[in-house]
Length: 492
Image (tube, rainbow, N blue to C red):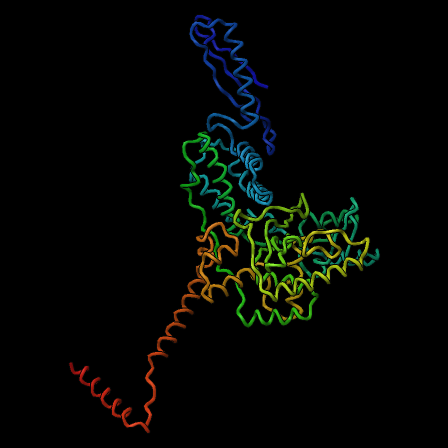
């Protein structure tokens, strides 16, 4: 609620009204925060009654602006304005996972900038933020709880295995503790409460000195830049200080891809695996799809006649939503991909296999339009693909496998065989060719080197002189004349 306070001059006339809007209390200290304030001046010649009525209107409007984030200057705090910006981005179509990542970054930023007014933030404040985030204290998971012998004695005495029910009926796994690994102190506390024993009796604490990655700090900088950039566009601040700050450089690594002999090793190992996973990995390799795009592919988007698939959705996972269907990464990611005939034959064989699987499970099968559903139909959790690759890698002693490496592998092979960047960019679904050339600059240089070596080999082989025919006298004479002419040329 807005509060009005009349201010009078020496003659007792009301010349202005001070308007205040309650801001709340600091969640850390419990102290009342400084309220929003503004001053409305009474125009000359207005009566006190008319001025009071207009001041009440201005107070109501100011309160609404405060609640909705539409302040006309930089007096709003970063925490309040950041919440408004994220809500605005969500309303205007920001992807859900991007919003989650923004909120994760915001939690790290608020202790340093949350209390500051937008107009007071300077580049040096942001540089201090990045400096503090680079310290081990900024990482929340550095403290780990390790099991003491008393924990195993208690579990054995009660006949408990690797799972313990907590007070809310949820299972707590102790497998990581059995391997000698640490768990979060909160998890250990829940386990101690479930067993009814003191925490210090069952667990010891180990402190690690790990720091946040540069990528995480850069993500915090991006969040700050988005918030302050919006404030600049709305003319709440004159300049976005994030543009003049010095964040750490992002970690840029070259895309990891498999060599041809490694691809052959992977394909041979797939022959002994389930047809479902064999088809999925094969399709990842030849199409260059992202993980979510592969799992979001539907049977009615397979063009059997023309041997191609259409990508227009992706399967994603978020803790508050579970597995859900979303749009591809960019507008250009909606695309049609031509596939080899061998891949189409494999897809047809797999489709028949899946139909037999549905008939086998009967009512236990959940109807699904997806080419690669879960074990009993429905949607597959994207993490299942990565988990299967880890087990597959260990079974066959293969190099490290992850879904995106197959996308990089297809791209590198296309570059090595001389395919142009525009065609590759379209197949990958990048928003521009510059995105492709930026990500794969290292691969393009290697491809250029290979092509150069190939051309040099071809040109040199065409220039190589043929051995003379000893039975043909004119050839010998021609050879002699050529040497003599060469000597003359050298002399000249």
